[in-house]
Image 1 (cartoon, rainbow, N blue to C red):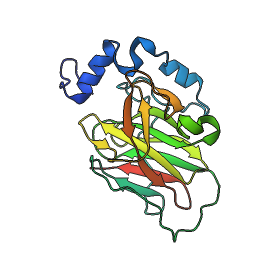
Image 2 (image 1 turned 45 degrees about the vertical axis):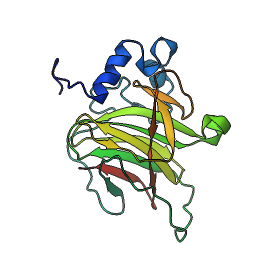
Image 3 (image 1 turned 180 degrees about the vertical axis):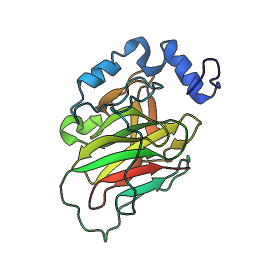
Image 4 (image 1 turned 180 degrees about the horizontal axis):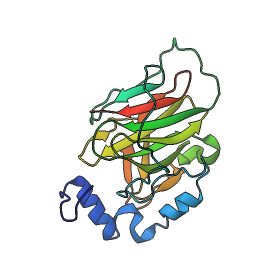
Length: 216
């Protein structure tokens, strides 16, 4: 846990300082709040992003500690950070996935607390100039914690993550989203002053649920 006065003035430090000055997260121009996000959550009851970026995850609500299910090649994928990341493209030999609901989870096997947001296709809510995808976040995950983030019929979903020690899970190009530093649930092209535009990594489901295990 961070101690007062010990935060290094790195990129994240400047962003948080900007938020306090009214520059980040939309400043005075933005009406988005973590309460608005929580009230608009339509997923599993009691499960929602933590709200303000930098807040500790609430045990038993957004993440859980203790014994976790064993990860296998069939229900998980390991993913390490880095700014350069190959763009994943589905093989043309892969069979079409059935439109059944699948669950997406993230696990922190990396170390320091990780902050995650996701995006998934929703042409009804976010069609046309809105970007075609909904973006949701942030979830905070401590070491050896796991968080459920989505149940969807989509075959491919996207995520971005950053760790307190500077690790970043992104790629050089692909689907991007405008995001504030506080909890949000909006279309990827809902951009307000002070938002960051971040590029997400794609993940394609196999035949069932998927846990993305964030590792070093």
